Length: 469
Image 1 (cartoon, rainbow, N blue to C red):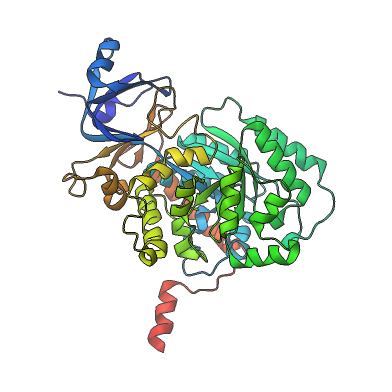
Image 2 (cartoon, helix red, strand yellow; image 1 turned 180 degrees about the vertical axis):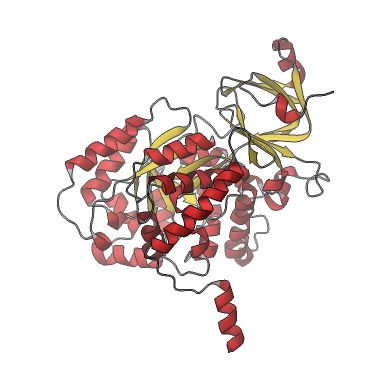
């Protein structure tokens, strides 16, 4: 009897994989094979040639499957998972009323469980990397690192370095202990197979000028990113204008904190001048289209960013962990917001959003030299996508179809660092359903004790009010 495919692939390898096609930067390529060994791609090329140069490996044929890079989530909040549904119908800047109170109610166990639950959802959606923008739980950030590592997902892990008072009031000089903590974080995960250190500032007004400059310098020196929510909401832009006479992105540039190390989260409200600043300095953006639809004031001009050569990746902002739906939302938001007004029926031609959901995203979050592409020497972070389903089988233009008709149900397997982490939506070496059950109880307790303030009622309550009128 033939051994089931998932059993053939359940192990450290090496593997010689022969799919129907491999998704390369230039498009899908048939007749290809890849060798996975020691967590990386050892060979990528013509199937016959790869087989000849690796005669000791038995080919694992993957009929009906596309082998493609795993998605990179360029912006997430892993410890906010317990309250994801609390954002529905809420106006902007809910972090003050929902996220900060919720994270403050988490202890070590609930923070770990929330982060691992988010990692599981991300893996199910085809994400092999998540970028966590830091948390305000009060627990050691290594709790989040452990959750990501135990789930088997790659994580760019932010450490929040806020040191200013409410709405940016400056308490004085930066605290030496905070500077040391940032430096320690940047070296803490050196050599870690899955965790990559990053610094973070919640919003520019949450840190003193000295801290913004210092975190920017430290990140640049370490080859890491500093994540800052920038130009996301009208209120934030107006506060910056009142406080500094400059918009948030302009302020960061004025103090010397704008550069390739910056990962600007959202950046939805940008002037032409600010787009030029991003292009000229090499700063990167996380474009979060679902967050814009659910709780934002605007949609980032991503098609313009692509045209200007501005580095950007796609982020979920913790909304929903489906890489294909994120790519579709990225294109859809551009089409509705900019394409309809200008008669642009393409808005990136499909491939743009796959590119920035994978290779471009990895570059934006600072690990493009490690992952994001099916290429020799890079980490073997990839998906096996079933293309025999009704949505994809009659293919005329696979990149477009993956963007508009792909979904996580079509993902057979998720590999991170050369190891199969999920098969048909379930973890291969730990109990996913048990985690969901545990998270359910912890989430209810955390939400009940958190001083959360919601503006919008639940859907059921809103319906009652509507029908009563």
